[in-house]
Length: 187
Image (cartoon, rainbow, N blue to C red):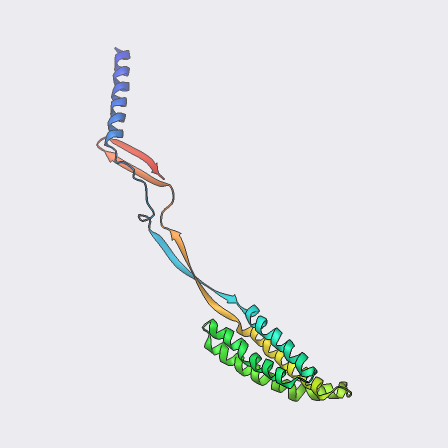
């Protein structure tokens, strides 16, 4: 009698387990559209000073060499391109305020170098020609203008959208049916 009772219990347990498996809700695979994603924006700065350097360095070098050699036409052309080169880079990055500041700096600081540095060069090297003194003064002011661009103006704000998945890859599932319960994991 005890043996048949234990067999009946075992059979009824297996029957309940089979019914539970048949009646339990089916887990469906979660698609990318079903997942709730959360987004936030990270703000940062990106440096693009190498682009202004790529414009300024060759133009200042051309100016210095041409002015030192007495080629005033080439030197004037290089200086004109120097005045507008870096501001064009700022405009290409859609930054008008730094473009204006850069333009004034590229125009006025070489003139300041001409007025301030050329007399110093005259005192230090009295035998230098007027072309070399002018080249040194203007180039010194141009280096200051280029440094202002590289270290202070050539930064732009960046926005990066970051996505966070709303659900864990392992989702617990619980089902209650009548006198039984089901526990599982959806992945």
